[in-house]
Amino acid sequence: MHYDETTIDLVRQALIFTLKIAAPILLAGIVVGLGISLVQSVTSIQDQTLSTVPKIIVMILAAAVLIPWISLRLIEFTTQYLTLNQSP
Image (cartoon, rainbow, N blue to C red; front, side, top):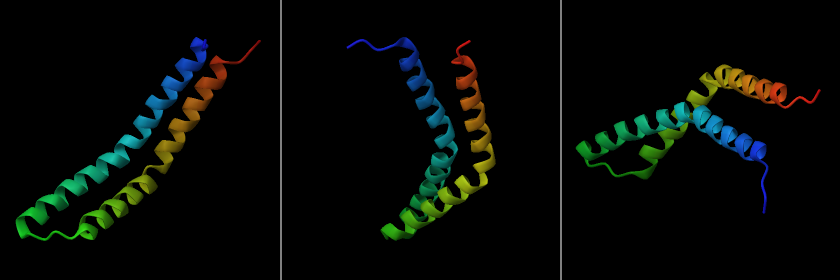
């Protein structure tokens, strides 16, 4: 099968863009999970919901705070893609 180089480049850019957008939200979840894991190991509390619920809450809050930034990045990505692929 022969794939167009432009298509492969677009998919590559879209995946990298997705990782850049998701990274801050995932990083917030990792930091909270690490902190809760440390508290659980010190106090010997091994409840699953104690680690899951705060991570979900922090990730939702991070996503809500980052909505303006994510929107700007989406607009920039779309504008860049549409201006580069505009046919004369």
